[in-house]
Image (cartoon, rainbow, N blue to C red; front, side, top):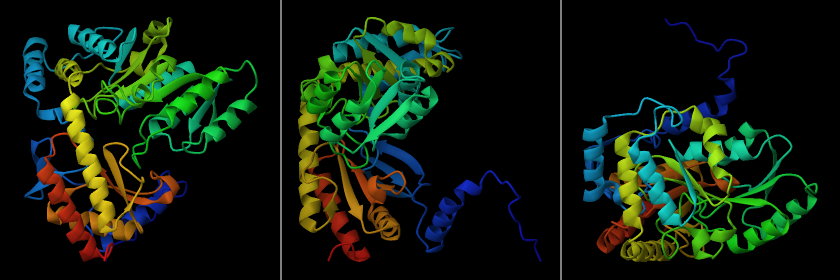
Length: 408
């Protein structure tokens, strides 16, 4: 006989009880845990061994497939040999090596901007930049579907948060009109929103923001490398780069490594290196990581053929899934992300597991991370997926969808 364990009064974990119950109910139904997948071996940008099976990867954000690029790998190996495994210090102390400067040089060249600042993660880039430039008494006007790192940056800076309806230009202008004249204003937008893969109307939104004297920050995490003539993102595609005060990005998507950055033309931007806490009080990226990142960024400047192939993959998969009868988050392919809307979490988990057994990995996204409380199977295409692999993916979706009853 065992004693029943009860949570003590004032249990700090009690706030998570609903999530714990949802997870336990899901696992009790016999579905494999979709958030605890182990890749035993990664074979290429598009394939890995999962549960002992050769699996096509369709949920990695490895948009440009740079993770196994020979030049990128060689740069990392050389830096590891020359500089060791880590910096053991902050960028403002002993943590700036030659590779960090070269990585920032590559970013300045890639974006054609005066300043570039590299962070240890994309999350820290948003956390640091937003919390430092927008403080108490300032206003941050942001899309309600903004990434968690954006919301956390707002909270850390203690600015007044003013959300507006997703991708709605009129709602943005309505909020801006109500902000006191003379107050500090920062409008935060994303080029591509990571859940649905939809693109923001940046041209109109940036114009409205400037009309009311606001600074503009655009997070291009999911569009860098892929969208725009030179892969600079949606701001480039829509012709508003010169009107963006800050562009935030990450190395963990198209660049294929880890890290984050901000680029800007603001003449005072360099002071951020002394006043931005998530930059000052964090150990810098290892030499091998900044070396691989710089090499990847420079190669992305000449990635027009890969970009074209990725667009074809995205259009083919989007149309194919719609033709099969799946509910897709956008009316047409807008990015490398395709969101397949599920009826509910239980059926979404069953569909995720059915696809995994077919040999296909996608992301199961659930509330509260998803907009409007939807459950999604989020697909992230890669420039290294062959046309044949895309057709195989469609066949896998058809078999799994019929087996689970999502499509007839």
